[in-house]
Amino acid sequence: MTSKAQKFRKQKKKERETKDQLHIRRVATRRKVKEKKAKEAAMDIEFKQPAEPFVKESTRKAKAEAKDADIKAQLEKNIQILKALEEEYLNGQAERDNLNDEFEEMGLETPKEKLDYLKKKAMDQVAANAEQDKNQTNKINN
Image 1 (cartoon, rainbow, N blue to C red):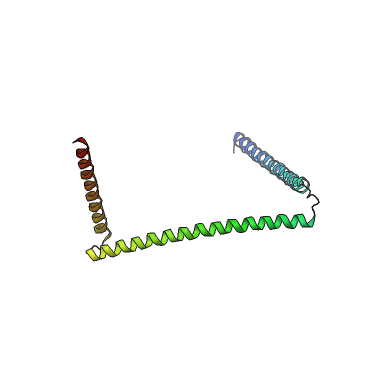
Image 2 (image 1 turned 120 degrees about the vertical axis):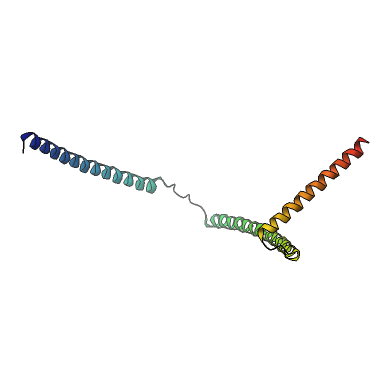
């Protein structure tokens, strides 16, 4: 081996060792900072919590009862909303069932046939509405 190659290898080895040492130092420093921040956060939580004022037991009970009443009222309101939504869903489901029954009576079985029928029905309705509008404008102009 030439002395240049040996020097180069020795230099690379030293660079790797230096990099490894720096990495170990950085990791240790980061760990220390992280532990310090965790301790500070724990101290903040422990000492920054406001002290509860001295409140009579009757006042505390009254506040708890008022809060319970508010919660109960909100729950009743939510139940009414849910019942209305359920009724709306059931009505929609009944309409869909009726429509499917109509399709079965007409002999429409595949989704494509059903969609084609609905498309044709919608186009007929649009045409009928357009004709009505035309008739009304003619009456107004006359």
